[in-house]
Length: 517
Ligand code: SAH
Image 1 (tube, rainbow, N blue to C red):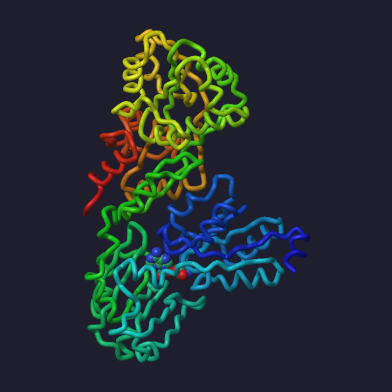
Image 2: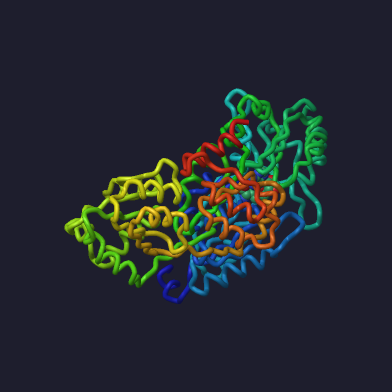
């Protein structure tokens, strides 16, 4: 059947849950679909951390709706899914939490069935259990409660909201209300009138599993007042039951070194940042904004020329690399020419290799080369100075790097009388991703992002371009080195510079400044 539909040019829809916010709670299947879909139709509740994983070329349709402020009516969402699938596309319908838990996933499936569109459902981690877990509350506990019940507090179209409070009270389990914040007072009143004790523990959990999660713990008697005082905003869930009293003893999310912190890393499109993983491991939420893109220069006559000459001039020659991207671009160029490193090794000069820092040296090592020189301070100027000292007088230095490489590397080499050839292997281009500009812009303005990390001057340029029009003066910029910081200061950002220009250095600085609360 599905084969027939495929032959008829139909695509397919995946109705998938994205979990409650933390990217780590995305299922493996949904994470894969995010990378593979042609078009993604997503809700307001999907976190920026997850949205920024969507590739630039993927079509994105925002159908976000918040209670009372419907952006796109439900029927229209179903129509969009059918329309896109009929174009033959791989459609990912991305919903907060689990698609079938108050997600109106059922209605969307009805439309797909009606139109005979092939589909799959990918369950997600639902906020009902995950948000309490991140708030230190087990929804069941052998000694206290043997069931939990999930209830919507959302009113019907006619404004009524029917909840059978006496039955709920009789169940004697944990009660979990979703979409109930607008009716918290009414829910409390209903439970009390049905005979629940005023001393029954209760909790309100806001933006659970995210860096900005907050909770209010109380009893039925005071929970409404406490939630009002704390100005709790949706999305939030209301929990009623004895298990709520575990919350303070079982707190864990906020206790992680970077718990409660949110960072934005500006990464090259091609690779997700190592720094993002490290910060997440320490408990932070990390939005990875693709800010730059590297493009190999091809055809590359300058490289061909350099390759012919390298190793043929004098006793000693140096090959210099200034980034891991440069290392992989170098070997990619060799592969393209069906050459391997023997081409260079069998020539007359001894070839030595210099790397700007530990990550570049590690990339070389991966390719089977141990760098002869890595400066103590990982920057272009220091590399130039060290190489000027170490290279044999009159030898040739070939630098394989980006077109827009630092101007500080070459002068010390020239001053030392060395011959320098600066070969551009790739270009760094600015990646402008319009789709998240508004969302991330308002998060930055509201102080929801603690700091933005930059690992090169070009990532600063890319970020500024992507966020054009934003006031940058309140942004805390964590920079890998002084040159990067200088670029950030041009736009008025507050800068901090890592003591060592490496991922370790960045991590250390972030932990010092934002860790251990
Ligand atoms: N399908 C979703 C629920 C959609 S209804 C799921 O399985 O989680 C939307 C309601 O879910 C919100 O009003 C709120 O009550 C709850 N919710 C979703 N994400 C939440 C979060 N991160 N923190 C607190 N409540 C959340």
